[in-house]
Image (spheres, rainbow, N blue to C red):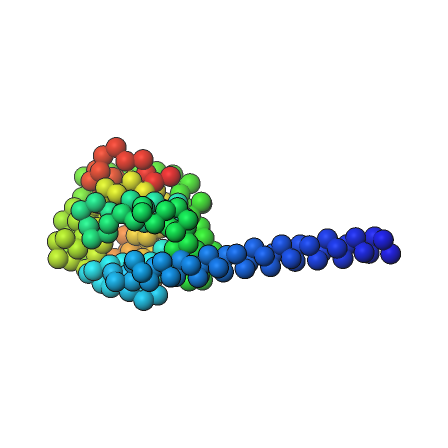
Length: 219
């Protein structure tokens, strides 16, 4: 009887802990939604779906799967120099963490950021990558990936603040598979905009890295 009582007690405590953790996470996400609607909704729209040519979606399933909390938090904190994304460091770590918790409520697939960021660095040829970039990527992302500033619909993937926060794996997976429900389609396979070979994708990554020499590859 004592053993049964002990087991019931442990199970009850575990369920209580799980329930408390879930409640805390729910409250944090609710606070994040409030902060988001006060600070972010004007550009990133309701439900953070974004607006082509103006601000990217933050709740796209591929982005949520590839991006770590560190990526989101540092981007919100630091902003993107030379773009319409200002720094929000004044929200404090707690406020920024709450926004990320809110964005995570839109997740529909497992987070792969740790494995993606651990992928090997690009082995590509930057000169060949520049050719492919100019042939394929410039149309949406502008020359040197300057994004909206060039009057295009794509984000500033050549922006130094972006490049310093993402790994080669992050870029690789995005080029391969794209972002559903956006204009960024994948570039591999028969359904891709262009069926790029793996080495051609590596070349594009190598070229993108030349747009910001000395970055730390976002690990």
